[in-house]
Length: 317
Ligand code: KPL
Picture 1 (cartoon, rainbow, N blue to C red):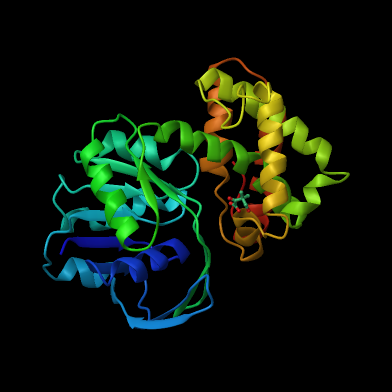
Picture 2 (cartoon, helix red, strand yellow):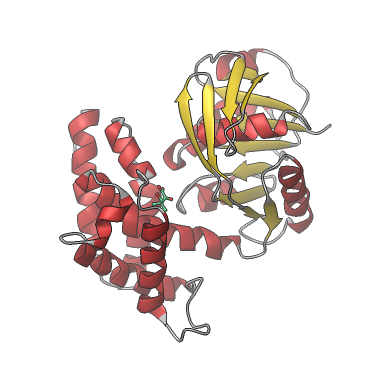
């Protein structure tokens, strides 16, 4: 059996641990201790309780372990590098990493810095935590796996097969960069606006938000074009191009997730740092690099920074 370490016991981390445990030697690693008995509620409403091997970073670093075949990093985007730094003394630098973050911040940085293979995963599996000992697998989705430089096709394939065998349908792809940016584009159009206004996704369809969505998508579409990222449903049989295609995609996701509290709204409500740096950050940086307008994106980032500062007690820079 292969050995998987999962760094970050959030919803996706725990869903992975539950799914992989029956077929692989799996260890879930976090900053604080969690109960060994962990519950999973399946999309079909079944309740499963199983013991998971859970270690704190301190326990991990004080003992010797069988070297992992894969280290999954399932923290929030801005915590990924620090989480990796916390365990580098315990793994070989050739260990394959799997990055599960939103946005496009951790992925290029860790790919550049880590000597071993760095795979990226983007998933539509839906999951949320119900406390220290429970996770709800709310909806089945699909996971795409690949690496930014297309150098680890066989390893991506191996991981996709393992995930599929574990019940999380997955496919190896050679365009993971495109897919990460596509998800980022949709997240940028939805997450900041719902987080700032404290509304569920569906509210964006009406005044006063719909116009703001269009203004965000206008800037996002220009950045996507400059980055060579195609809209997933653009320029096909519907004849839509660029901005129109991105807008159609965003409205489609808003419709499909109308009742959702987006992840950034959940972060704000729980007074946690948001993923603005990983979602708006790369867009603003790219717009500036390409000489494109980004006033709307920068405005959202500033408003979010202000809001975070109000509950985190940090000073604006
Ligand atoms: O992925 C999402 C998120 O919540 O982060 C969206 C697409 C906005 C759905 O809620």
